[in-house]
Length: 260
Image (cartoon, rainbow, N blue to C red; front, side, top):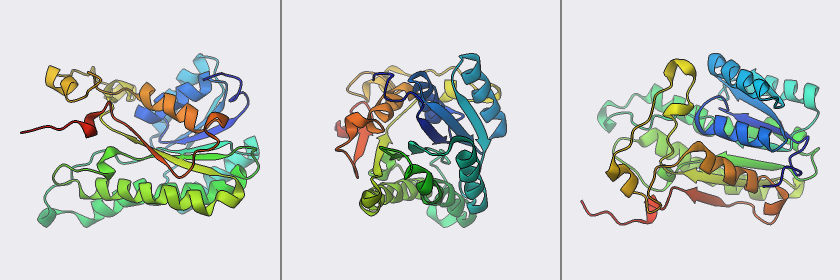
């Protein structure tokens, strides 16, 4: 991706302080964008901001819980006051632990929290970012979904449902915002290793078994950079004829037949 397109573009990344979000923040900033990282974890956010600034990259951090309508409204107010417009919104924030136990013991408060962050959050962010996106020449929204929107392990009700809803929200927004010239797409990551992309107090050195690698036709587990490269493309003018679509990035894992 050429650096020229993202020069002086304003990119807002929710959940941008760790994992895939941090990988995208680094990639967009290196491509010349002004990156606004938002995250509910202030400690992680400050660490991400410090790293970006030490690399002489243009970045801000604003703490926000995307499940809270007042906080999202205030987030967009601050972005508007400082930057004037948004060129892209990357809805990445989410509660990532998919397992919640058996159906009979399911904690509905925990279920509701996952839905609030993973699905209501992107809806709120799209709603309140729209006035800022409309000021840009080629605005885009990118939702980070999951291959769990299409397939499941046992006892992953809330996570799978929220990501399935996000896939539907993607094409609904794409059609609804077409007259506003806002393109809306999604990326559905598979197994992306993020243990070494956590804040310092939680960072771990990842280890993968050979069978973990062999589940993927490409021969390895994914990395945040794999998602970031696709995000750079989908939010750019090179993807100007793409909207309402979902790109699965999983090293081929979901197309490989596995016999137990």
